[in-house]
Length: 456
Image (cartoon, rainbow, N blue to C red; front, side):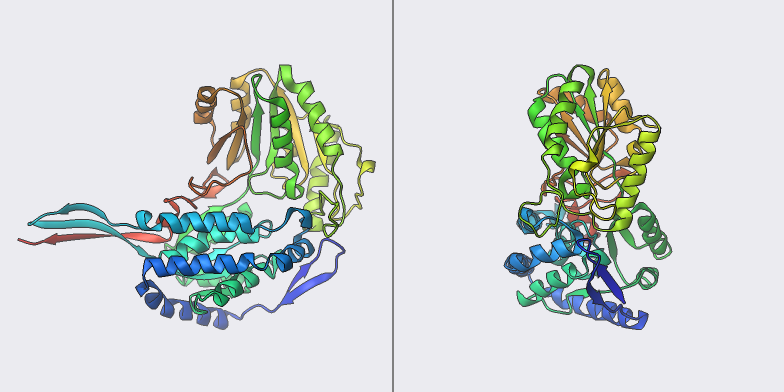
């Protein structure tokens, strides 16, 4: 039995029984059997049904927003994820015709040579708790549009989110045997992958769990897409708009209590701007209101689970013991020692400290002064992760030059913490592998097939 423990008060918010391995295999078999008929529908019809499913999901906002607050603590004042879900699904539907079009090499009297892309079959999407709808749609939309059937497995922390998403799609007309929500334990999930139940597996979550997924897929040569940990840096140069940099980077570090895949976890500021930046950052954070996420006045909710908050507390305590300076007075916030964790800004930090090297995934950020671009680049790359990097300057050429040297999946200039559906969402190093969104996102959920016809 899976239990969602609400971070608001520690109560059990929802429970769901897991499928047995036989039940899970039967569900996968149903999806596999239904896939040819789904593929036989036109691309236009499949895209239309996906759009309808997303539209039906958006109609559930009034129910889904407080539900998410109960499950993972995001304040209701920020609304749901459905604007982002719609943006991403619409874009993937818009480009589907071009992205999936045949590559024609030759069409002459003598030869027809072309490359077609066909669906991989059944796609397993394992979504995380921090943005259960937006992360899922990154793969669900292109997978369905391309002609695959989909098994969706969500996180126990947001137990009802994938269930709601699938219900919305079914109510909009997507057949029940084309998109299935499942509740599985880790062993059953691994057994299905090892048994070649899927043509592709997309996983968003921890590095450890990602390695387990990759190991399970190795023997069956199942394709995998992995978005794992992050320690995303921001770098503020002397020609940056300091107000915009502070406002955006601190929001990127603290929004959703720091529980964002591409949230800012470390900031480097050129020496001449350091003190002014820290002063602005401090003022921003001191204006936050930590409290019950169901209260419209709350700007910072609890962390999703006590163990997540305890990890951030441990990183912060160790950093301070090693010489870091904690700038935020914890007594200003309603930190209860449990899921309600006060935000923190640390200075005098070094890369010897866990808080600057390990993923925190919470409302804490370390800020370091740097001499120049070379030192900033060295520090940004001194990480096991590579998801995004945020560069702040008024010079695009300078940003491009620095960006070329950053080991990361996405380089931002003068923004952060955003997924552009027209651009590939990817990472390197321990952040994982694979590509979601953009035209490249269709390559993960399809495979190429070559046709070489000799006519004469």
